[in-house]
Structures are given as structure tokens and as C-alpha cells.
Length: 369
Image (cartoon, rainbow, N blue to C red; front, side):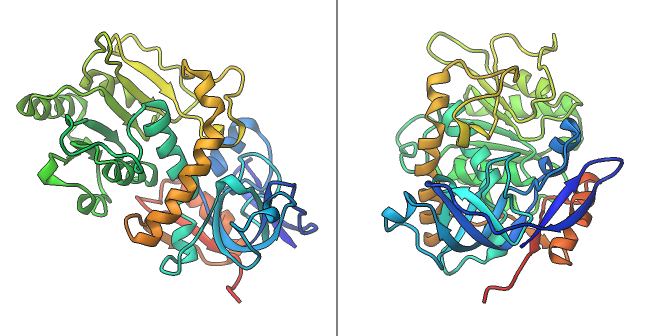
């Protein structure tokens, strides 16, 4: 089979080589890749670690073969249309004709969902789900906030990107309101997701951090609400988390205040961060490993909970399939980069150049026949 190896330096370049079709481990599924999705981490992590590998982790395709333990159940069969989150930085990734994923991070694609749409979902929705429901202890979609209970304000910075948009979708599925979605250009796809009747609103970050803080605080004050939950879906080196921390209500006895971040490259120790805000780094790899890597910043206090992330993700992926089938969840806007596997280099270069603009780049690797 053909597989793409991504090299991060001196600039992103790729080479395609021939390698045997992988054999699944007992709990793994080999998928014939129809469409592969890409994420910023596909070049960023390689650059940071100065390594070269097949870095794709978003897979959509057809079940080719099943591991011995998977075949004992009737959940998956050869020929099924599936999408999967491949374990990061491991062999047999998405940029190939065949990829491998553990069965607990595979879900069935319903008939109404294309392979392209499905390929936009796995990694980012897992990051959003673990952030909201595991690290911030918010109610999941299968056990949503009841209409009679108190509102749960949630601030999402970077709501137009794939990660922020899936956070909005999951929050609404859990009846978490009001959602304060902070975005800039290329956010027309976010507005229809917000529920103004429940107080949801969009704010343009380009007004600047001081005006942004003022606007958020005024909105919460008018509604008589405290906000203890924020998600920085960008976590850029410009310190986006600092003004976010200042929008939150400081923790009180019995009511913690959470600020989630998604980059492990920052220390999050600035003096301007509001005291009493618990910053927690979401490492989406816990969906597979059940643990953070040694030395990672701002790890959650409850490591026992982290160890059960793979089991939780199993349930989460089955619910993703259910929501897709019911039409209560959709993928992210996408652009198909021409060239199949040959197009991965161009797509990653465009990602690095910031050309995604609220869309996901996907690559059609093979036909559906």
C-alpha cells in the first residue's frame, strides 16, 4: 500500500512509499481509507519534536479487517462505513491507503453522512468532549442539563475553528446555556448553532481584549449570572487565556472555575491570570492512553478520572454515531484538497500558512467501490 511520510523541516515536505497493509492487533480495526482529514497538530507536533512520520489521525473509510477481540462482537463487520481517531504519533496513520485504530475510537458513519464530512469529526470532537465533559465536569449530551435547572454560562474562545465549533455543538446538545461564542471572520457557520432564546451570543474578538472583557462581563451581569467555565480553543502564544481568565467568576467554596487550554507549549503562569481560576490542559491523547505524558503542563488533579478516559471515549463515540444518524450532529465545513495522498503536502502547508479559515482540509485517498 501507499503511505505518506510527513517531514517538518526545512519546510513541510512529504514522500510516498510502499509498505505492507497493516495487520490489526486484538482490539484494532484496519480501515481502507477513503478520506483522510488533517489538523494543525499534523505538522506542529512533528516540528516541535523534529520527527517524520505519517501524522494523520482523522480517518473515514471502510472496515478492511478486524482484530481477534473485535471480531468476537457484532458491533463492526468488514465493509462497514466508519470514521476513527487514530492514536497520535503511532504507526499506521490516516495518510495512507490503509490505517489502524482501536475499536473504542471508531464509530459507524450513517448513510446520510459523507466520508468527507465524517473525516472532519474524530480528533476535534474528542478534544471538545474531553474538555467539556471530563475536565470541566459539565453534563454530557446523553444526560443533559434539565430545563428547570440553573443556567451554565460557557465562554468559548475561537468558536469558528473546528475545535471551537464542535464545542458549541456539544454544549448545545447538553443544553448548556448561555454560550458566549468568541470568534472573528469566517464565523457564519457558527451563528445558526446558537440559541438566542437561551441567551447565546456571538462576540467578535477583534474589538480587542479590554472591550471583549467589558462586553462579556456586562452580558453576564445583566443576566445576573456567574461564569465558571471557559474554553480557549486557540491557546496561542499571544496569551489568549489571560483575558479569558479575567472574564470568569473566581472560584468559591463548592464551585470551582475552569479554564481549559489545548496547547502544551505554554506555561500558563502569567501574573495577570485571575487568582482562583483552575487552568487545565486538554491532552486528547488520553482518549487512547488514559494518561498524560511526563512533564506536561497543567494536568488535572484527578488522575484516576484520566485513567478512565478510554472507557468514556468508547461511550462517547457510540453517541456520536447516534447523533449523526438522528441529524442532531453534523461535521465541520471542509475543503477537499486535490491530489489525494499527493495533496497532503499542499494541505499541511496551507494549514501552516493559516489558510483554513474556519474549514477543515480533507484528502480523498481512494474511491468508495
